[in-house]
Image: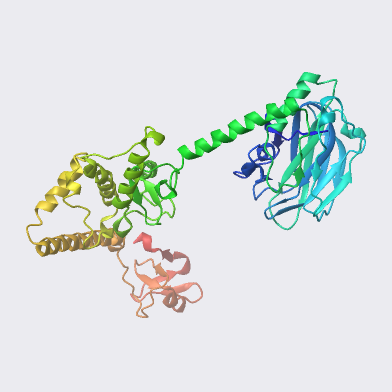
Length: 477
């Protein structure tokens, strides 16, 4: 006797006047996919009530019942208003229902004067699960000729975000706005939507054999397509990028323990370089240098290549690096990243034994200038590792000492140019300094002892007046 108009396939539109949280948009209330529909609607955490939701229906309808799910995770809606409008635009709304301090998890509003017409007579009325559900009535006058429905969320329990778990609007189109053929089309579209398991609504379709046959065939074909799609994209979670969730080609282990593809890490490093920042872990912000340098995972790489080869017909044109020269390509980008980190890092941060070079990395022909420098350093190591290490230690310590001496001179350059004034008092106080007319300097303690009734005498027997004394700052020397 009624169909659910909160269905995106019927052309219903919903809008929210506040910012929605990611994956909890207002469109979830209309989705046919129950994995999205059960998420419901939730505003951002900083949004305070009231929050308004407006449903725009494709045709003018007569309301049979409105079901509101008041609980969505930690959100429990306790106060709300329901407004109806017979116009397409404007603010011409009339209040139909207002409730405060609702304790149940679901509430259903019925129109007791509802009568089904035309093809809707053969449909069965929706039955609701009455456990923890409250039922009430709405004004029959404001339930006919409805084009828009507005729900205002006024209060939630506790200090949680504002949200709505579910919203179902059951009814039938008005005959003056929808002919018989269009009504049958709406019934067929509503029957194509599968039933949600363990939901509070049970709508057994009791229609003619023609409508049942038309509605059953698309559901079967749609389910078959879903199964085939899941088979084609069934990629193990170990082979997926932690950021892009795509199949990795060159897995790289980050200091945070996450595994990403080399191309993803290169994009992140390039984005950080635009802001003159060092390469960091995209998950923790730790600088990628020294012991925190990213590491290539050859074992995982071999497993991914084996998976790609076995499922090449299902994956299609999936990128891979299986081949003779894969060893060179695998380590080239890692070596380039390590060289970039070493060039960007300060000299004082270099420690003993942190030399990012090896014979295997020197085989990459992609990096030209930095490779020559690394190769020159590797050739000077000689046959013995101890001699090379001691030479590197000497060079590193020499650079450290030179840098520290230079920085010390720069910090103390201004202080060395300042001349300390020669005080003519023997108290040894280095506080405030004053200059007498005789060009002698004296501290404040001795000055106060020397001056009597506005006149004083210096140690050189020169007389002066207190108005002739000038205070001298350190920057004036």
